[in-house]
Length: 340
Length: 300
Image (cartoon, each protein chain N blue to C red):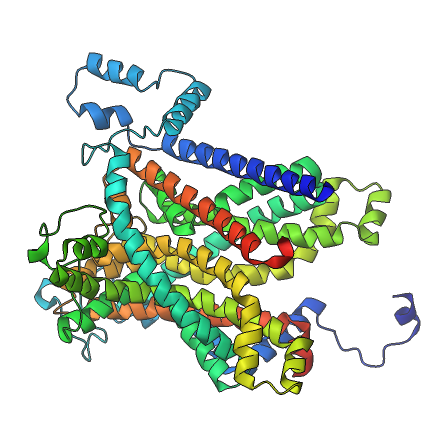
């Protein structure tokens, strides 16, 4: 009984802390939005509007009200999911983002599969061979992934694998002549083309996604490798590993069944966080690969000062990040028997 | 101390300050591992090149020569020329100054800022701690590049604003670290002694706590440098950092992108420069972590 109450308190405390963080996020985006040198009224009415029109829009936007009232208005807009319209596309920002986000999620999901598929075994191998040459080699490989400017690697990879070798598709999500062939249902191209039975489009999409996803995956594998290695080292140093070996289990079974089995929970949380960090790389890689996703939407609006769109993007990234943090927390609770 | 005064010193040798000895030991440890050595060498090279840029550069980094645009690497132009006929090698050499400026300015801002928030939160605890750490958490809930993008968008694209934006996003991990360190000293006897002597909180933090946090904060700053360099280059690449004609490496890659298919050298060399420097910081940070891990130090 007492345990239950403590648990409830814990959940309530976490709820409050999430709420406070979200509130802080709002303040941050509000403040950044206010220090903009771009005049939001001018952006809407244009350069040669009359003074009267200008004043009208000025009042409509609530810019004549004191700061705290403006903030309340902003909060109301956010709560009712009214993020205004994008100046560039002339459509509601939320609608725009719903259109471009699937492309990024598709890319990031592919990338995390590659990153985790590469990083986890490398981390285990490094831990098992601590301080021997495989460990050193893996350390350098993963630090390389962590150190490379991803926009540059993207260009070089395009130059080599697309322009010179012709192994993969170029920029964009699919070849030019396939665009518009597949009805947009989910905006996830791989799913849409599979649903429509357009396997050629599907193949083209795979051909295009593989290179940017591999690069993103490589850069995120650096973090996953390092964490896997340190988790494994913790486990391998414990007595149950020695016991398992003494009772005659093979090295491979000890490492993979026992030690690795125990770090799975921690790994899941790490992968969830790495997934969020991919968003950052996505901004740059999407620019290089002309990938019509969230990152490209953000940067192209940034350059023309479309602040509604930019601030909404930033807010959404923040919310996704907080969401992934909570998710990794929940996963930890669900999978780790000790927290039950 | 009183003991040493009574014994006449046999050798009047000046002893090095303790911190210098420690630094020497760390460097000695670092040079023993090939990867850390690579990091040290690249960094030393970066600093030397930045210091003597005008002597090393073979051409004026801004001088255009429209008769010699997009020349491949050769004896006169080691790394070729760009679309305006400027010498890429010279631009890279001068660009090292920009990289170094970014690193040092960010460090100068981030170190004190993180130390201030961290030590104050850790020392006072309670409500102050909660509020300050909440603020830190909010900043930490963004990927640093996205938050820098937002700040630069708000302040307008330029090198200075990029530096401000990076600094604004890079302090939270430092603050967290300084707070954690402070929490371990807070209950120490020497702090209690200082308090009993009537020292003010500000004095205790400044004189007794900040110096104790410095070593770990320094390492963390080194580790962060790689991220700082990549973020700065990314901002430059997106056109939000250093503006042309400044020879910033990321911006050079952005302009070279248009000529990439026929003139590979435009993007290749600046990219290698960024990769080397950020790899150097990562390897160095890795080595530093080992060097300051007492278990590792004893093993050598």
